[in-house]
Amino acid sequence: MNIRQNVQEYYGERLQTSADLRTDACCTLEAAPAWLREALRDVHPEVKARYYGCGLIAPLALEGRRVLDLGCGAGQDVYVLSRLVGGNGSVVGVDMTPAQLAVARAHEDWHAERYGYAKPNVTFLEGDIERLSELGLEEASFDVIVSNCVVNLCTDKRAVFAAAHALLKPGGEFYFSDVYADRRLPASLREDPIAHGECLAGALYWNDFLQMAKAAGFPDPRLVSDRPLAIGDAALAERVAPARFYSATYRLFRIEELEPACEDYGQAVVYKGGLPHAEQVFALDSHHVIEKGRIFPVCGNTFRMLRESRFAPWFDFIGDWSTHYGIFPGCGASLPFGRTDAEAATSGACC
Image 1: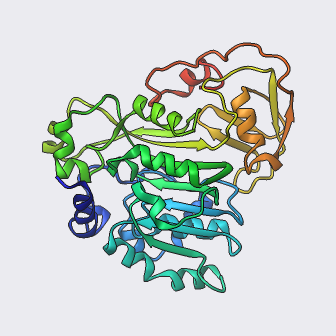
Image 2: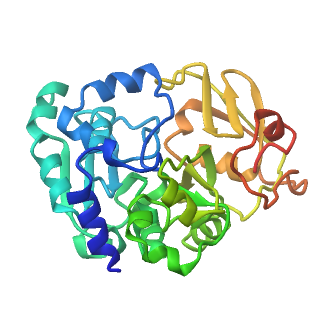
């Protein structure tokens, strides 16, 4: 099976709307907060109809930032992000399916007018995200890179992570949702065009993903949210059994000094509040939900993620690197998905 051709045909011809999907892998079931629902309402209906993402790709603090969307499809996330970055920011979307890009490009002026911009702040490029170097994008030029249920469709996933690292500014982040499996999948499944098009056959075993991200220069991947996937097509469910699949959102920071584990230096942060859409509580990831005004102990990596990223203005920082107290408890290697709040609370602050 030609992977590239299968993706183009599946998303350009076989799927006409999200209603044609056989699983909920390429559907976003997570409830959007009120501020994001408002942005989603302002997306053109034709763009909405051809949305195949699995997560909410709307990280905070984007005003004036430069954002890259890998595998942008018909452009829903690009247009939502273009509203979040504002008229002084910009969003570049890359996709290799002409039919999807045609829909995205047809509505640039419509969205600019709806958002009150003098001109569109989006650019759509046709290209393969496994070969981003061919598009002439400047290295270290993006504040944030996003992707929504696309990396699993790629053959050379390592190339995608390596390119994302190279294109990010120091302190920038790769914020993306994708599909993961609880085990390594048989090679025969990767030749199934339906299983591949439905974002299952190319799903990474979660621990392989962690090692791949670390090798690309992202030492400490942070899980933001996750959910188990349902496969409504009985024949497809039988072909992929007994593997279990999850949709998960991760954030990866390009910060060179991050360590491979959560080391304790006795540090803490205080969230000053006021970040739009998180005035009272800031969630860095599923284990770091920080209330305004509260002294919040953190590991060295979390300290750096907040101090050396775009989030720094909203925090006060306590401590230095003079004393090392060992590793935070709970920095283990078990399946990270599907844990209850109680389980997370008892497993340590960091991992």
